[in-house]
Amino acid sequence: MADLHPGVADPVMDTMNFLNEVTVNYPEAISFAPGRPYEGFFDTEQMFADLRRYLDHLAVQGRSPAEVRGAVFQYGPSAGLIRGLIADSLRVDEGIDVPAESIVVTVGCQEAMFLTLRALMAGPDDVLLVSSPCYVGITGAARLLDAAVVSVEEREEGLSCADLEAAILAERARGRRPRAVYVVPDHSNPSGVTMPLRTRYELLELADRLDVLLLEDSPYRMVSPGVQVPTLKSLDRARRVVHLGSYAKSLFPGARVGYAVADQSVLRADGTTGLLADELAKIKSMITVNTSAVSQAAVAGALLASGGHVSKLTTETAAHYGQTMRCTLRSLEREFPAERRARLGVSWNAPGGGFFLTLQVAFRADNDALGRAAQDFGVIWTPMSYFHPDGGGDRTIRLSISYVTHADVEEGIRRLAGFIESEAAAAQPHS
Image (cartoon, rainbow, N blue to C red):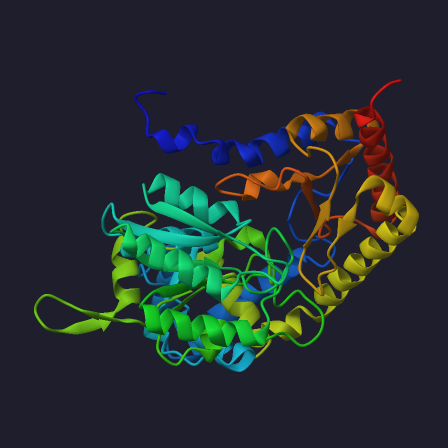
């Protein structure tokens, strides 16, 4: 290990492996750990119909049979084949009006993060700021790129612009250069918090004033019920936002299709200008070369079928997740009435969408506690300490509602309550 990059030994790299092991070792346990989409709405035949629709679309556009064949069988452009369709979809669904040339189609959102960080983090003094708790995918990517990460503790409503500004100024006082701020503004993973509209405007103003970019990752909007708060990118007038997207939750994760919207202007050494997206595509050409043309075709067919309105494709799934979240909150209320809640020191938040909510407990919610929950009570959850880059979250757990039935929710929360009661009893001093 001493001869390998130190990033591979970072504890963040083991978090998902540990959860997978617990899930495999206790197959009868009810798991609130995975953030994977519910499979009940997937239709195998639909994938073939979408592929055919895209191939027909190419033919209608005037492509010859040989060109259609080459589009799906050959290497494609590093920036992607379906940028125009993604741009149209973002315009009609999200009010994000950007040229197709500003989009890079990636192998999932994780690659979009990696490309963006590689482009922006130019030297050892460059810094990425994240909220704490934070999605481990971005901190893991930064670790593998040797990019410095500074976390800003979330408040109850999420990231505070005043706290963020103080952190940026503190880094500059140390001689370092804050380059970007990573945010999940809608139903965030892991906390479930949604950033209020006023904070979004404050954040955009702050980014412009302090000359930093905002990396917006928002995969849960289209699978959440109700009207959503506008994205940062749709409100962005100064090109301060790099919007990182994915079709994993809205269509299906097996496609592994994501994208980066990077319409920032780049001044080259020869005096010419281009888009940041052009630079991301260069980096991609040296990593994955191009995103699978077959996967892009499947996504493109779905976009064509809905006229670009992904929201029309996710009406049922958004309703399903909303119902499951409400079922979870009702089950928590039932198992933890006010008196029991106070006695056990339990509380939780109530997100209006997304896949996750957080539960505060009075004991250390670490891997050992998770092992006891799985073995003795048949319930699995995720320690929130995984998501705090600088430590914290030791008495908080994350519950994911995306992959469980209502019956599993009710039984799982009953088991969780038994586990929490047991932990509280074990912590009592013996007379």
